[in-house]
Image 1 (spheres, rainbow, N blue to C red):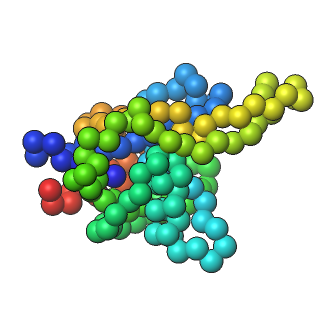
Image 2: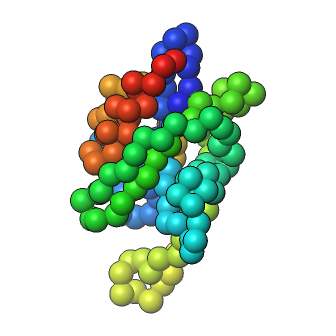
Length: 148
C-alpha cells in the first residue's frame, strides 16, 4: 500500500512478530502477505491477508507488481493500491494483526502466542528499500514507477 503526501510517496511495510525477528530491522520488513487457501485467487489472497495483518481493507484499483521468489523458496505475488482518502491518516499504531502459537523457548514444552506482525511503518522509497526483505525490492521499484 502506498500513500501520497505532498507528492511524496510512502510505502507501508510490516515487521514480522515472534522471537526470530525481535532484534532484526534492516532487511527484515515485508509487504503484508500470506498463503493462498484452496482454489483462492492470488489477488483475493492478497486482499484477505492484508486485512488480517493490518486491519485495513484494501480498495481498488489494484496495480499488479508481479511475483518474486524469496530465499527460502516462497513465491510472493503483490499488488499496489493507494490508501483511500478517508484512511490517509492511518497510524501504524492502529495495527491489528492475527496471531500464531509457537513453542518458545524451543523444546521447552511451553507455547506462547505471538502477533504475526508486531509493527508497521510508513517509509519513503529509500528507507523502504533498506528495510524490506531484499527479494521484495522489485515490488517497491515497480510501485515507485507508478504514476502519482
